[in-house]
Amino acid sequence: MELTHIEHIGIAVKNLEEAIKYYEDVLGLKCYTIEEIRSQKTRTAFFKIGQTKIELLESTEPYGPIGRFIENKGEGIHHIAFAVNNLKDALKEAASKGIQLIDTESKKGGDNLEIAFLHPKSTRGVLTELCEQQKE
Ligand code: ZN
Image (cartoon, rainbow, N blue to C red; front, side, top):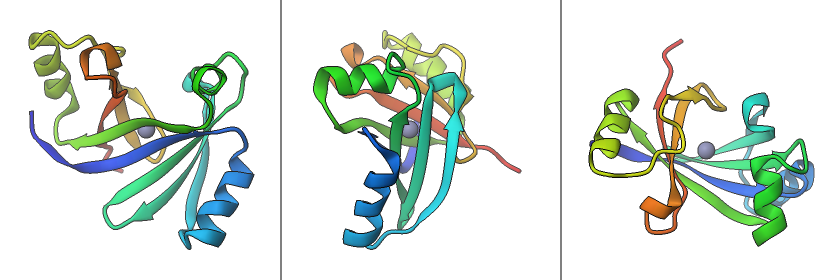
């Protein structure tokens, strides 16, 4: 498959507002959108650094995926997201190469992205998101 760049790095945080303060006040980045992603039971905040972004993820429910992640591992890096031009084809290719997919169909992520996750069991321990920018 053809990856164009690292779209973002996803970071699980306990409290979105407090985490945003760190990224803005210490690192000097600017949060440009906060969205609730109901399908994933998260609230997300995005920051741009060049063509890459940081996505902060706060759980809206204790047993959502981010809530469980923090429960098990604490706050920290949750996933890496690669941009692809054709998400459907990329998923097909990954499946054909024996990669276990968490999402066999793409779904709506934050910041106007169509996304799908590959299982960390198949990706050397890194939860991997493939994403395609949606055209307005
Ligand atoms: Zn993400």
